[in-house]
Image (cartoon, rainbow, N blue to C red; front, side, top):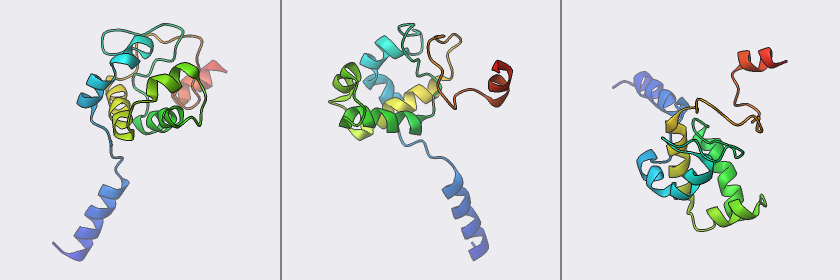
Length: 123
């Protein structure tokens, strides 16, 4: 392999988003999360934020903030207290793998989750 091809391959790999977690392991670890935030066959409690289809990296960052106490929320702080960073990445990968739920709660609008055409039509 010549230098140009090696550099091109390296640049391609560096630019590709890497899913850090394991969705299969995350599904097994997400049993407590599914009760409120939904899963494959259950939409979750309607007034909580449904996590299906959300970006795994953003979800892991926010969940780690609950885990470390940087964001204070009594239920989430307790729910994430025993998870390791790797387990949180696995759970985030599981939720990303689900895709967006068909019906979402009207009580939550997450900035950046809507497609540009949806945001434009909502105005």
